[in-house]
Length: 456
Length: 134
Image (cartoon, rainbow over all chains, first blue to last red; front, side, top):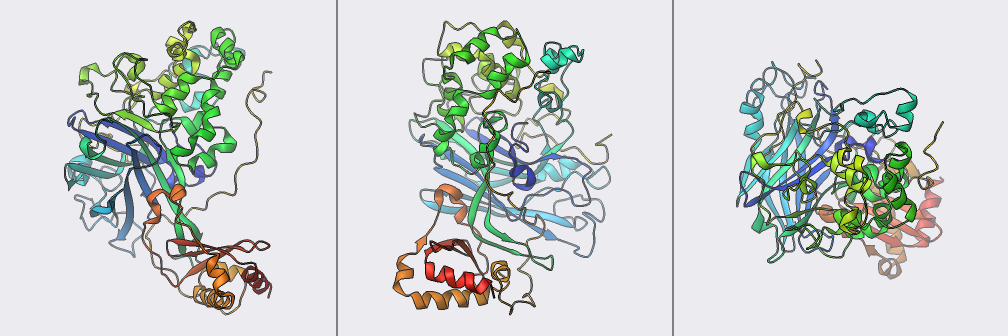
């Protein structure tokens, strides 16, 4: 998964667990950037009676670095609180929920949005309503028309915001990837798959028909960038009070001290498959500015070394590259500094020499026309896609698999011959593997699956 | 049977215990005072339900130490760790949580509201340790 349950500690704290981060020039409002941070992974839609909600004790933030130093220049903070309409009922709702202020909806959640920058802190919105979870056809009829779309709030100055349940749009064949790297389309060549007599099969989207909670904000580009620097770095964090003491009588308890960061996400899949297990929790607690300490994981990715072993004879050039001990400067550039001018024609998202894991979005590159979107992003010749920020549809699993398998190494060594299989390397999924497709308007994340029909 | 465990770097110990999950539901006020709050114990001190008592003890000790303790205070805003998170909703200011990080060196963290004050006070640390053993 992009970052679902990716580290030992945060896997036990799903409310604060960031799953995916997106940042892209809004296709229908190209003077704005949309940033979406997803939390609470793998939500089974029928998960009542206590349906999912954001953590009232968690500080959620989306950060923007606009000068390339790996520190936030702008942070959007989101704080939540829950209000019970009928505290003596055990039910999430006591009748159909037909509006955001419907008294039948017992457990409502609200939030505030604050912008923090060098000028200080300013509250952009208070008491903003989240939509309910998509409980089912009787409890939440006409979900998007009556509830989801009504939870898009304008904060003025061209800023829009949404926070609430959405369909999981990230697609990945978890069941195969974490079963000894067995990519189903190539499992006949996997050393273990071959022994088991497996044959090539399409991928299975393990996150299909599950939900997440999205925090989405759309901001005019001129409120994010510095003059002459169109590329921004974006990441999200979740923080908890440093001290938490459970009350003996079950209510309340004490939260004290400053917030301490417990979750972080910039580029997809990094803490998942790049950072080693022993360093994952520490990675989650750092700021991008301090990522030099992790650079060796990017320079010598473990997965690049595993592929030739898992697929004997399939990646001979990659095996030789691994054996040479040469640093993967291509991976370091893509993920830690951005790609400098002159490497990919007509493209750069370089932010400077500071190694920092952020989604780097060159806001001067216009969004691709709907028919021209290539889910392989820059690898597919579509400069508006990952690693230029990240769109919801981008196939980041395939992109990163192929990059780690050597596809991008010729960017720094034109003499390197890419193994032929790399160009078809994939977990066998595309964006069409997702049942509820993204919306064509803010907040873009698809309508959440309802608990009556899912699972079915 | 091929194995993959020789390929990666050797696994080291993970960092620290798991972060405890806080309540995800209604953020209510602090619970009522602990009926055992008059019994001094380290656990009671850390629970914070005895915050007033802890505050008194700490205040008394601090006043006894005087300028040396104040001089050793290290108000930690921790922007590198918490981002902008230090600017958050306040907790009841009368509740303190005192963490004796190292009794030998006297390193003590005092959590109050959304702030953290770091003390270097071996004498106070020793008194707190002694109190916890009563």
